[in-house]
Image 1 (cartoon, rainbow, N blue to C red):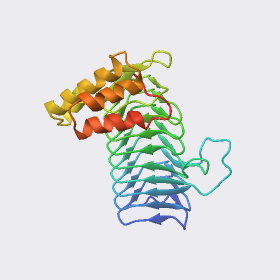
Image 2 (image 1 turned 120 degrees about the vertical axis):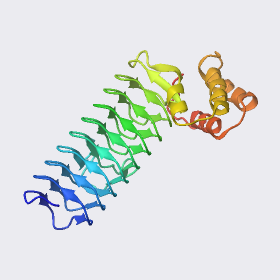
Image 3 (image 1 turned 60 degrees about the vertical axis):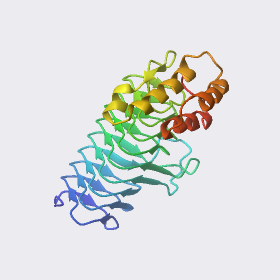
Amino acid sequence: MIHSTAIIHPGAKIAEGVEIGPYAVIGENVSIGKGTKIGPHAVIDGWTEIGEANTIFHMASVGAVPQDLKYRGEKTWLRIGNGNTIREFASLHLGTVTGDGETTVGDNNLFMAYSHVAHDCHIGNNVIMANSATLAGHVTIEDYAILGGLCAVLQFMRVGAHVMVGGMTSVPMDVPPYTIITGDRSESRLRGLNLIGLKRRGFSDETISSLKKAYKLLSMSGLKLTEAVEKMKADVPKCPEVDHFIEFIESSKRGVAR
């Protein structure tokens, strides 16, 4: 059902079974996949691709131009996968040509009210951004990360898989996967593994034990970062999760929270 008051550009591509509520605005270069629901007064603009079975609530802003003073109207993208929920007043912006040219969102993510995804961000699958969680430009969020309310991730930072970011936390460095980080910018640091999250998602006791050893070397050993990584490679039992933990640290360009 498409409400009679919705404003839809003739060039927009609307798939079968899409619902569009009263006074929603759909721009010329937007495509919306099957079964997606658009709430009242939502605005979807720009070169925006939305997959199937997404739910976009009232007053959400999806595909607006980036808040980047260098942007000059270039053709850049916002690409959204399937099964996402974008709550009221959330905002997701296009990419920039000085970045990756696109902002990308995977599948089955939840963006709570007033959350913000800036230009050139890349979000995986099954991520939760709580109310007013904010991403600056060029941020990467890996699968199953949870970002607490009012947290702020600085530009170019990465948040690893299964990370828990505490409410009102500032994230000025990359956050290794499977960990918890809390604190404001001057005190932001790791607080341990996200043990509750790992157990809920079915990680084995052996995997968690290996991650504990790797975490202690990173955060509690007093070793230099390169020394801690070498000791992880030598001493920690191997598993895909530990491999990812090490690879994430080694690939960091902005420093790693410890």
